[in-house]
Image (cartoon, rainbow, N blue to C red):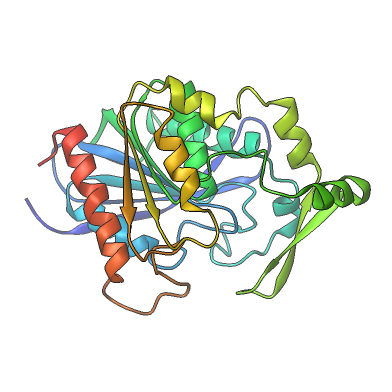
Length: 289
């Protein structure tokens, strides 16, 4: 078997519910055998090529998996500018339901006759989600039995408690709430429809309910120095399903000590711990040694 890494980075999908494009890439080692599939879902103010995600995806690919990474349609990037928040109008209109449907669109594509990614073992499709994307993976695994395992990285445990009451009241009154992005220096707008979407679809977007009902292998990985999502959320989630596993990375922050842009060639120690545990779990549940 050759160790030649192949990257397909020009897949563009469109949801049935809207016309926003979703840029997708796939990474795998060229071979004739079918490979288990790992779909990585980025988080809030994130994108598929953020920081060291590509290095991590490459390592998973070198270990026998096909790694598929989408830019969710309303994350603010575009196919033409996948590293920049160039479409803040789309970002402002994003909802949890849109993101969940985007993930469904990608999964449907992988199972379709139009999929251009070769040699996929579609009996072994797994989800890995970071931060808000972790919640998406849990919800999608609950509603789609094609998913055979889930790994969350620094995941949220609930979508309904992210903002305080004062913020919510002002947001509802003005219709728009702005999130400052310290890296890009952008005030990123969020329309109140994301809150309305949550309440209109509260059963579908109930992460606890999803986790409690999951019958597939489940691993939560979280850093104990995460300033964005407290580790207590991971600890709480781990009690919702007796079959789940919690792995704590000591000293790790929300991105496991990565950064964007990431200039290094080697992963930070805590990111290496993250990928080592992730691969160990994937090998265990896929039988891919």
